[in-house]
Length: 270
Image (cartoon, rainbow, N blue to C red; front, side, top):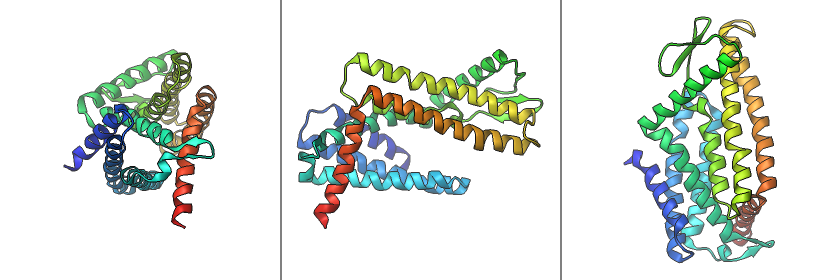
């Protein structure tokens, strides 16, 4: 049952996204958010065991946020029907629901379905090897997802595909009700760019590790992967997000609407 919670949540969110505006839509979406919160609440232990405390924090925050949105929707709080500071709250929640449904499907299809997981990782491995050859980096393929430089092996895992960031932008862009002539550029400046930059990142980290650019192999991997590539990825995502927001300012309205709803709930409770 636990393994199926995410599919139940996504199914409810997808159905709620396509339903016309009604009380049933809000209740179904609220239920989807509640099940979504259960999924995230079960993830923190995995990241804690890996020592990834940032993702521990993010999963806890995601669970709390999902519970909050689910509660407001199921309760059908009157603040949902208001325009707060000129921003339609119900529109913002509907957009967030669609973004979570589409983005969640885009990620969990590859995360939870073994055949899709293998296909994506294998494809990224193929293209990483190809790009390395373009840069004259000698990479040896040892298995469908294992490559080596100078005898040092690296396993390509799901996190090496950038699917998390790609799914995030796909979901957010899909949530916006805008003409195709604006949606298409937003997609092109985000998803293909993220994918391409991630391949460059893979080649850089693998070559730095295998050729011991920064000392011994372990230190080289740490500096290349955890320091340089992490900082570069965050900077690139910031620039990409800025470009997408310039093309689709409706996303800012969505964020404002949710923040206004949170503030309104706390003011109402006080």
